Length: 224
Length: 200
Image 1: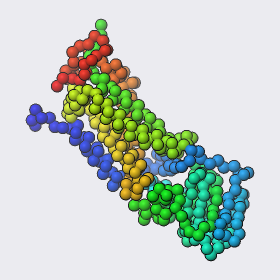
Image 2: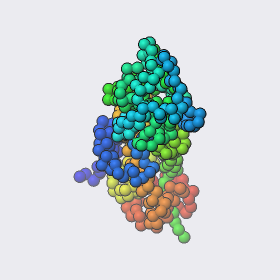
Image 3: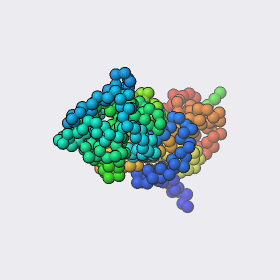
């Protein structure tokens, strides 16, 4: 080795780190998935480290659930509009399902246990009219709103969930009730649902106005 | 009487403390966006996102501005010192820390901008961007904890903090820890106007 021109270790280390980091845009997520499943138990030991969930909100403060004043309105193009209080919602037929939750930004939570009311069970009570082609979900977190086609909303696994992993839905997950549309990315699963309206057709929701896909099928939308 | 030798130039110290301040600001706003408990407690996500994103851009701009307006020759000399892993003004561990910190900064910038763009245009959306940004956080925290331990707590090395706060370190300490460093001319006090870089 020529002593006058020592090897440029510094530049090499810098470029290798940058190249490794940039290339991880391709391999990062699958590898991280294996790592975190290998240390899955360790995450539970440190309460501050996220257990897979991230809490995304669009308003300055999260809605607060008051059991005495809370109402869920189901209206629009229906023969039998309905206003439910919390107890009436919980008195509807219960369904439980265990599904993976996928966020469009690249994180997922496996095996989430949701309990709630099937939308189809709700539709049986309100009876959508023939003109209804979409279902709009309005969040108590203003201005969040999103919609599904009536056909999508009528899939058997779409729930209005009021329990998560065996406990009442936590505030940050949309207490007291959120939509769960497991086949689509999480931004379709409106939190803090306060109004469900049957409309002629699905329209762009909060994120769709900003360019996200309206049909947000997991793995088949949003450029993913 | 203790004699002091110049170790870090004003430009280097400005860069270091700017970098530290912005990093801590971005760490705080980033954790409030990232950790469920923290984000539930703090709320105000749209405001935090703006602060975090624009704070990140300001971080890079501030470093660039100081590098541009400061003592560029001294910085170039420091960069050359970092090229070899020999033990001169810095030991190999310090050099690796500095190089990784610089690489992480660039990767934080790229992945952060991609996250911001991806929220606006699907062409910039990659499933692993958020993984990279998170992994950088953990890696940078490991470096930070080690760095703070050696600079503030560990008795044998914490004198080095003086070099970064006041610009100079005791000559005796410098000779003991950096025997290969050609220390600059002796200085009787801290108001040094020399660059503080070792002659090469």
